[in-house]
Image (cartoon, rainbow, N blue to C red):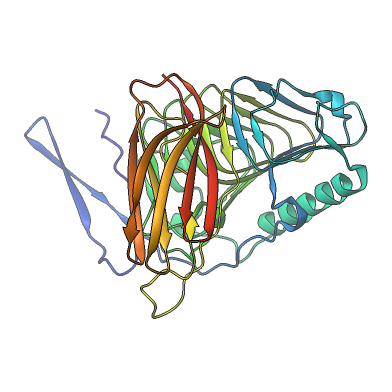
Length: 361
């Protein structure tokens, strides 16, 4: 009889205990839970790759309609190998090695060579972090981390172990300054509809997936963190990434996907009041039909949060009021609106910020 998998990594402040599983109302099986202590880590220095949502070596291809917030770059392949992007799909700059790139792209061969060099440095940094993980940080779940809760730290998956997030979501639980580094010797596969969930204030900007071969993100999956792959990265239809897709040698391919470079929100010790104005990426994204928009205010001010379509027309106003300092969340119900790309705009005093989101029926 197969016992349901319930393994979980939990913070050290909880005592070691056992989990009783009742099967068919009669037989009790005791499964030990591993205790993992969150490990303090420095984030990986991405250098000049930090502003790239997508960086690839041989090909960047898109099946419309996608929403990219961040730069796109391709090197050493020529600009003609960046395909499928329409005029309203990229909030950022497309950089190419020559003049054969898409309309509006910028030729910057030297900069792209430097960016690929910085990617190699960052990849090697992540792959070489020590001490070598052991216990629950070494090959957790035998490679399948779906259904687990992982505290911050350095995780290692040895050669021959394919890392998958399948069947159910994985939760990364930690504070806003905690760092996760995943050393993956072979490949990373995220199942269809599976989410990487952040809890406790964890930030996508502090999550790094070093992949020895290639990564594949399933249809409508939601992924967090920067992927640094030696080979290729494939993102299937409707998947959403708060992070970066950085492929050293081969291709990055996306299909009606949303890729957003993550923002790092800094915290001030002993200050409950936010340090600065912040507008976060909506969640989920793509969405149908409701999505949530989070923002924070360091001072009391007049706030306007509005929704704008791709033609620049204001189609909805979610907030139009004076609000005190703090964290806020607004919901937009897009029923009655057509599918497509929308922009949400926050104006708080003199602060103005805009981000893209994808409504996909």
